[in-house]
Amino acid sequence: MPKIKAQEQLPKERIHNFNEVSFGYTLEEGQKEAERCLQCKRAPCRQGCPVGIDIPAFIALIKETKFLEAAWKIKETNSLPAICGRVCPQEIQCEKFCTLRHKDEPVAIGRLERLVADLEIEKGFKIPEVRKKLKTPVAVVGSGPAGLTVAGDLARRGYPVVIFEALHQAGGVLVYGIPEFRLPKKIVQAEVSYLESLGVSIELNTVIGQTLSLDDLFKEGFKSIFLGLGAGAPVFMKIEGENLNGIYSANEFLTRVNLMRAYLFPEYDTPVKRGKRVAVIGGGNVALDAARTALRLGAEKVYLVYRRTEAEMPARQEEYEHAKEEGVEMLFLTLPVKFEGKDGWVEKMVCIKMELGEPDETGRRRPVPVPGSEFSLDVDQVIIAIGTRANPLLISRVPGLRLNERGYIKVNERGRTSKKGVFAGGDIVTGSATVISAMGMGKVAAQAIHDYLS
Ligand code: FAD
Ligand code: SF4
Image (cartoon, rainbow, N blue to C red; front, side):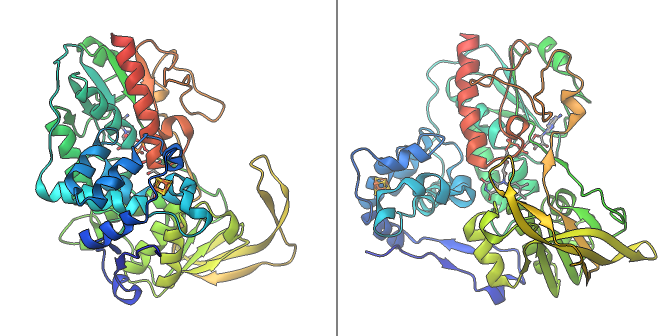
């Protein structure tokens, strides 16, 4: 039986709105897709899931039309299934290992997860009973997927947990980075309120390292602290003209549009430039999100400028296909070398063509400039999405906290830092990874915190 396709908004319609692109499965479609699962005894799909979901078990429940039971089964190990079902790169995780991939397309595990998680949101959450209430409070700094996972796992074990979040809304990249058309804010909000109903409290607008130090938290009585700070400081290209107006980091651009609702200006009071000819630099999910957001803000031409080729792009395949359907023009093997402007605003981007040379330290072939291949593009907005790094605000102020050679927090395999009682996980440890790997690290750290406190 072929894989069941989920319905989507048509490209020509969706580039004019911020509504979700995929409608997901109906219950009937989901049940049909679940029928494809072979219920393999050794369940290879499970090896690809960093949070250990019992995939065949939840799919078997869908087959039997026990949709809510399927959601509860997932919730045994994953507190954020409606989020994971939308943005996890299943093609390189659970679905990559599905037995069916040898003969046909793998089971659409992510879509099935989304279906039942959405149903549970609609019908109301089942709140698991906490057997024993403990008296050792834990502080979690940062409310991205890593912090939310630690908070959920510890709350379920009975710990009083407080999350401290610098921004005015909880969710980390899930709210300030990933756009509404891929992950609606109401879905993130619903899964955050599930954690609140487990007893997690959230202190918003609190920058640890500024408003309170880690020592203040210990003095307030927290017995352990988890740092899930993400890696939110943008990296720039450091080329001529980069300070011209109209040139944004993807972080700033996406935060303005997503979290601060700049696309509804002046109803929401954060403005953003709506470019007509926009160049986005980079080849990952962040670059694609920025390009597709620029289209939805009314750009007539959006270029995605990437120095390697399509084969090396780190972005999710589905998002890349969606971006192409929407009309984003891909300029591969291209590197911007200079920006030119008039009256302080960007007008031109000078680029050079690249070719692939010998493999670099990552094993990918290194792009090298082709002499004499410079050309320029007329642009009125540029968005730079070439990566991020750790924000030093907190970590530079914690004596004794060891960092690795790339400036991220050094931890052991259980998320333990060099500072007693302090654990860390997610992008602040890895640099930048995925939602589910941040959650996987959160799960490991939650267990380690529990062992430390027991
Ligand atoms: P974050 O999500 O970054 O959360 C960290 C939180 O800590 C933030 O809310 C921040 O405000 C807060 N914080 C930081 N410092 C302090 C402080 N001193 N005091 C208090 N709070 C603080 N991954 C996927 O799997 N699939 C995708 O499709 C995908 N798309 C992406 C699109 C974009 C635009 C971006 C930027 C990333 C994307 N990723 C995707 C990557 C993924 O979102 C991250 O790997 C993941 O969010 C990391 O989780 P985290 O909890 O470590 O950090
Ligand atoms: Fe089902 Fe694929 Fe997992 Fe087998 S590997 S149990 S077919 S999802």
